[in-house]
Image 1 (cartoon, rainbow, N blue to C red):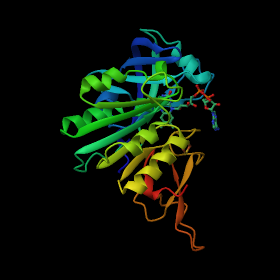
Image 2 (tube, rainbow, N blue to C red):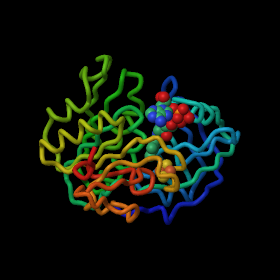
Image 3 (tube, helix red, strand yellow):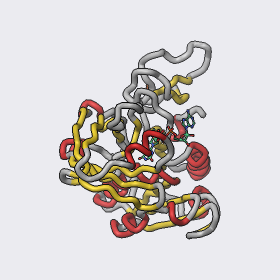
Length: 274
Ligand SMILES: Cc1cc2nc3c(=O)[nH]c(=O)nc-3n(C[C@H](O)[C@H](O)[C@H](O)COP(=O)(O)OP(=O)(O)OC[C@H]3O[C@@H](n4cnc5c(N)ncnc54)[C@H](O)[C@@H]3O)c2cc1C
Ligand code: FES
């Protein structure tokens, strides 16, 4: 998974459209042709709230087509609240595309994409790219409640088969999406984005089934561009993603610390040492 951020830049964009897909879930589309062209599935931007009073925040690139790049986010705190107040015609500076993105070079024919909550924002480009390669794509999509299963129809229209769960049983099966993943047909490959407990459960299901899994981690970022080492995860020292610095411990452990923002955010589940 090579990092692709040699294509990254600062993009001064204009908001084309702003839509609320559910209470507290906002889609902001930007006029950003260079960003849309450069973005690979699973990459993200650091979006800079325009007031200058809050730090930039990491957001996946949800859509990238023509001149349009879109961000889909849940209002969780100060920065996403400010970004949710953007309207068509407003300006927004973003840095990106950043991170490695998903490795879609393999020949998997039957792919399970697992998205939990806001993790859905990282996987639309991935689903579209796999479908273009004629892979069979099943989206396992879980959320707390029915109205937070946003934009599911978009995936169905694109050609994905959908399996949905809600914690409260208001749509699809009641329970965690990883339980559904474990019950359904074994895929060739798994791709997942969502909260850490879900990703750990995906890693367990993948290990038990002997299926390779790529996980996009949702770490809290400081700088977002590799400078502060505030976002590290333990990783096998033999991983191709292991950073050259600091060196692996010589105390008998092969664990190194990789920056989620720089070496990731996507890691092979079997290489993480959680
Ligand atoms: C690569 C990447 C891509 C992302 N893409 C998206 C996306 O497409 N859409 C989206 O909605 N979100 C996405 N996120 C998550 C988003 O960046 C965070 O939720 C961000 O913190 C929101 O900023 P905020 O100021 O609005 O909220 P914050 O004030 O930062 O709070 C967000 C939530 O995280 C909790 N939190 C804050 N700091 C910590 C901490 N140190 N440890 C644990 N929990 C904490 C808060 O309690 C709150 O529930 C992504 C994150 C990463 C790393
Ligand atoms: S957030 Fe600063 S190095 Fe990752």
